[in-house]
Image 1 (cartoon, rainbow, N blue to C red):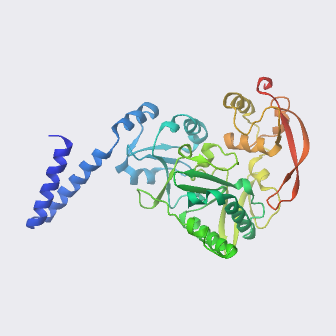
Image 2: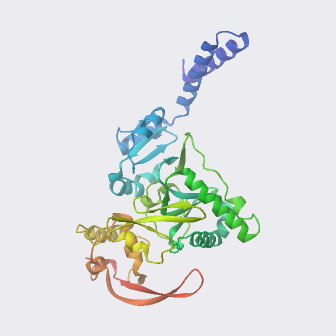
Amino acid sequence: MDKTEVSDLLAALSLRIKNNGLDEKIFKTIEVLLEQVENYESIDKEMISTLQSYLGNDLIKKEQYDNIVKAVEDGSVIVYFKSAQLFKIYKKDELYTLLSGQLRTIYKTLNQSYEVVPNQSKQKIIIMGDATLLDSIDRVKILIIKFMREKGIANFQNDDIVCFRNGNMIEIIINNYYVSNSQERHNIVEDLLKYIFKTEKNNNITRQLRNRIDSDFEEAAMITMPSGKQLITQTFVDCIDGLIGNVEKCVEICKSGNTYIFNVNVQNQSAEIINNNNNIAENINVDVNKDMDFVDDFVDFIKLNKPNWFTPGKWIEKIAICNAYSDLYGEVPRNFYGKLRGRIYVSEKRGVKKSIQNKKERILMLKLMDYNELN
């Protein structure tokens, strides 16, 4: 007897018992068995084999979800492969090593892979929208920037927003900040939508930004892994930093009345900052006490991967190199640019670019070397 015949038999028995008013416990038992058979038939056995060949045997079955959520340490990432109904847990110290490399390689071949973000966990702010917003995405980003600055985050800028297209959806992620749980995220998104409606004086944008996040699990969101969607903004972001639960290099924000406050760790001392105009990005990324660095690895990474942000022989904004390094390895070491002079760039100058308000801003720029000159 094959699985289809078993399923048909269980369904027939269930109907018979229900119609004849027999023992409710028997009926419930058959209903559970029927659900299990149907669930088994829906599992992609080929995907299971593929996952095991790529990721080994430390995969966890869906029915163990409640146990793994309780056991996962702060900073870990849970990945769910829906068609195989299996989980893979990456510990905090594996994110920028094992997972980062796999996102750039094997995850591109794995369909229906999702990041599971428990409601009570730290998380970035993500806003789901309809793909029809694609033509208006620049306007949406400007509105988000104005909103965040008015709420107290004076340094909020265009690069803090990353947008992906995921089928018929658009995902807008506030990438350099995080909140303590999903309720905090919901509260801020609702404030943002009210601001957009009031500013635009219509609901053309807000009605397309109210798509909920679907999930197979109670008390958790399911977000498509970065490798499974298309980056639609010019902001460079490594796959690993596109994860909603990866908040290692982010600043926490929370509501305080009608204002947002945030905390930033500067030289291992926590300082609350409100409406501060200092360059927070530098304080976050640079640790003057850090002796260990990955500059050699960074140069090798550029040679091997030829990332989009690296334009050989061209001038590039200086901070872009710092951001790229930080995305890959975390905190930037002392004398960072000095260690790279003559290795990836040859000279620097002051340049000009237009800001969000269409004003000219003075910036520092570096001239990159050709790939065959990198050393």
